[in-house]
Length: 276
Image (cartoon, rainbow, N blue to C red; front, top):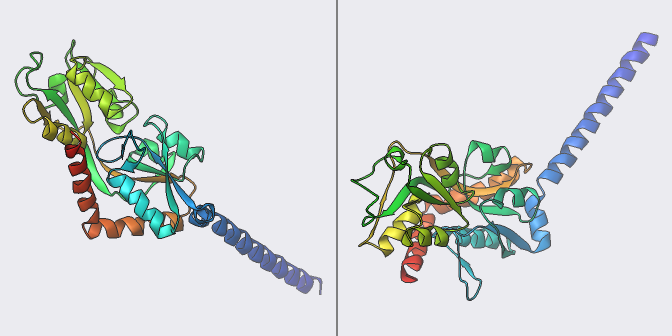
C-alpha cells in the first residue's frame, strides 16, 4: 500500500514538474519571441546607424538617411508596419549601443567572431573585404603595392575609420606604419587629400567609390593575401530567440535572392557619385 502510494505520488510530482517545466519554457519562449511585437507596440524600428557610404549616408542639410542598408531598414520597418527611426552612432559604439537597448537593430556590421559574442547576426546582405586606396602621385608610394606588407613601412601613415572591421584588421597586421584612427570616411579622405595620410584602409565598396569619383588620381587595391572577407549584416541583441532572428533572415533572404539588394547598392553608388 505504501509502495503504491509512493508510486502515485512520484508520478504526480513528475507530472507537475513536467507541466511546470512546459509552462516555464512556454513563458520564456513567449518573452524571447516577443521582440518584434514589442517594436510594433512602440510604433518605430530604431536603427543604429554609423555613417559609411554607400552603406549608410546622411544628408547634412535635411538629416535624411540613405544608402542601401538604410533602405533595407526602411523596408523591414514596412514589414513590421512601423516607422523607421535612425539613431546616429559611431563604429566604436554601434555594438555597445545595441547591447544597452538604445536601438533595436544595428546596420551594416561585419560579422566577426568577437562581435558575435556580444550580439547576434542575421544572414549577410552582401560580402565585403578590406582594400587600400592611395594617391598615385604620392612620391612616398613606390611601385605598385600588392600586399599589406608592401605599405607597412616606417614613415608611412594609414587612415582608417575608428572601430570598424578595417581598423581591427590592420591593427593586428600593421607594425611599422602609423595608423591614424579617424571618426568617419570624410575625415579619412581629407587626411589623404591633405597628405596627412598616405593610404586609406576601408572596405572595397567605399574605396571603389572614392576611385570612381577621382579616377585621375586615386588608386585602390585589394591586398593579397586578404586581411578579411566578411559578410555584412544586421546585428540584433544577443538574447533574441531563433524565431525572431529568423524573421529578419527570411526578409533578407528574399531581398538578396531577387536581386533587390544589388539594385539598392547600385542606387546608393549612383547617389554618392552624383554628390561629388
